[in-house]
Amino acid sequence: MKISEWRSEESCYEATAKMLKRIEKSELNAYITVCKDDALKLAEKYEKRELKGKLAGIPVAVKDNITTKNIRTTCASKMLLNYLPVFDAHVVERLKQEGAIIIGKTNMDEFSMGTTTETSYFGVVKNPYDLSRVAGGSSGGSAAAVAADETVLALGTDTGGSIRCPASFCGIYGLKPTYGLVSRYGLIPYANSLEQIGPMASCIEDLALLLEVIAGKDERDSTNVGKSFKFQRSFKDFKVGVLKDMGASEEVMEKFNEVVDKLRKNFYVEEVSLQSLKFALASYYIIAMSEASSNLARYDGIRYGYTEELSGSWTEFFSKIRARGFGEEVKRRILLGSFALSAGYYGKYYLKALKVRKLITEDFKKAFGKFDVLISPTMPSLPFKIGELKDPLTMYMADVNTVPVNLAGLPALSMPIGFVKGLPVGLQVIGNYFEENTILNFAIEVEKTLDSSER
Amino acid sequence: MVSLEDVYHVAKLSKIEVNEDEARKFRDEFEKILEYFNLLDEAPESEPMYHVLELINVFREDSPKICLTQNEALMNTRHKEEGYFKGPKVME
Image (cartoon, rainbow over all chains, first blue to last red; front, side):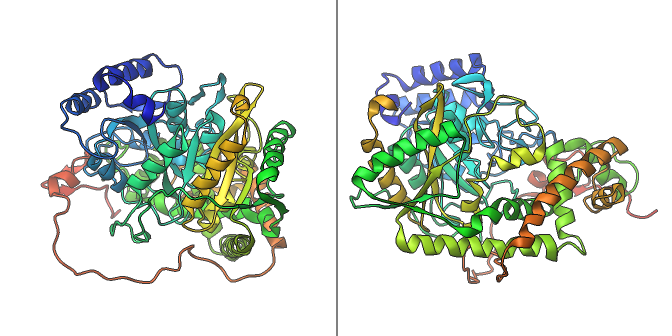
């Protein structure tokens, strides 16, 4: 549902109540916590014209790794099952300042570690187009909620594709902003050098508005660059690079190539190959796991999170709590991260991954000397069946088209371009640093180019 | 080759208890994953990149601000005593 459609409802209170009922009856499992009473109170306030701002009276769902004061924030982990934050994330402060109705906290892969939400302690999020399939991850709850009118807007986070993957699988729009555009203050960290909070919506205009609200200066995040974002419509002849190194299954490629052919009629389109991309997935996972092993050291069972009666030595207690509080994928990544950073392996894995990160970034910079945008299929396949990805490496492979963007810190969008066998297909649009406006304007042109009947 | 001892070693470094079944499963998986990571051996040499942004240090006034109160800081723990966190024993 678009903001314009929500605004055309006669009563915000009634519409909110209806939405809450829809969530209650839903089979998708998109939410971990629903803020029913607070949402209704805010809707009532809006009707009395006491709620002001760019998002006044608009429901926004927040991924459950983003800290919300006095609203349980779990990261979909047993480790944080009863964690009640005492402060708001920067982006949540911004939502409140602009009058948004926070409708709930969305389901996700545990600590964002996954591509399908199957690692969630709260169970998988189902795809709104086919309940036997996954909604994608890790921001699967946010994407499914937008797609199924269980919210109007949503916030997700993207470490290696966690906004774009579920946006693609659920047929909505999701943007991973340039690293440093949106403050990460209050985002519970998994891999800080890679992750960004970003908007998810059912049209480009709404996506842009939510980005305007959350982008901007915040000195509590030392990597925040202090730039704000304002959506500006512009018209230009886009130079489009088609990333040959980012492929997909035959049926997805067929749809993608259809779109490319149509774009050729209006724009300069050329294929481009970045040699370093074949190393991206390995580099990404080594860096992400290494950062995770350090970031997740904070869960000690003492200050917050899952705990038991104190017993044994510090090390024994610590190790027991962490064994019982973390799920399998989280343990796998912490252990592998510790391995990559450990004496004797640091040079072979972690340092090498950082070197490859440099190569990839340089390759992208070169490509943006020639092209305004680079495009690819967002995901290498249609949404997976629940349980389809059996071993971890196969799951990691699904991120192959999305992770290079995080390594380089670039902005990228996933937008719906149609359906194959009744399942949504997403187009990834990558832009140069802080060129979110170029991406969004190009996306509008893509929509114009595509026949509305086919989408 | 990844050995069971390797798994126990990183589990110890990570302070996560693993039982023998888990260790065996992790060993098999790690072997496959690390083999894939070895792809990086083929990559050309380059400078390492520690961060995507070329950041420079900025300083702010070191002035007092409102931060968490003691009660707020202790709100999420079961292990507290007289306004402090209480941990397991450190000395044998």
